[in-house]
Image (cartoon, rainbow, N blue to C red; front, side, top):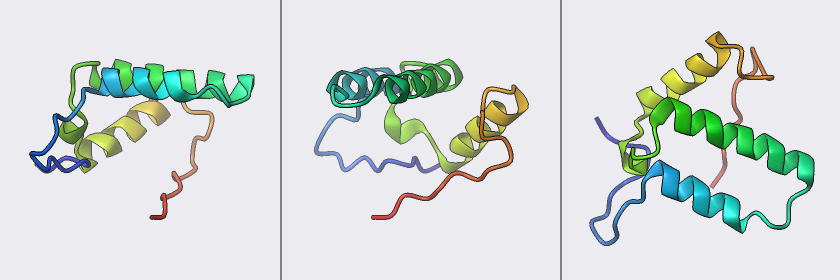
Length: 88
């Protein structure tokens, strides 16, 4: 299976845990409520995938399973809403 993040061979692909912790450390400009929501999302990601999973080890199918897990477990406040696609 192909991961959502391509491994170019030029750099080491970080683990999900490292990436999430680094990301949160950079979020010094966000409002408290946004930070809380992001922290919850990080907790959910790490609970589902584990801290050691590399970013390129998360497949499209794994991401779909994560979404289903959020909805089935009542963890998502956006039940029934499809996630927005990021442009770029």
